[in-house]
Length: 103
Image (cartoon, rainbow, N blue to C red; front, side, top):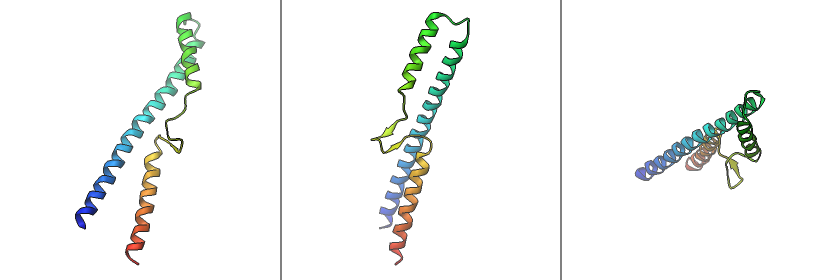
C-alpha cells in the first residue's frame, strides 16, 4: 500500500511539473505576441518605415486580431494561472480523501 502511494504521488508531481513547464512556455509565447504587436504599431507610426515593412506590419496585425489563447477543448486556457488552478483542485481532492480515510 505504501509503494502505491509513492507511485501516485510521483505521477502527480511529474504531471504538475510538465504542466508548469508547458504553461511557462505558453506565457512566454503570449508575451512575445503582445511585444510583436506593439513593435509593429511603433514601426507603422515611424515616417522612415519602408512600404514593405508597413505591409508586413499590417499582415502581422491582421493575424494577431484572430489570435486567442491556447485552450484545452474550450474548457480552460493554458496560461500562467493553470498550475495554480490545478493545485487547487488537487488539494481539494486530497482533503476530501483524507476526510473519508479518517471517518
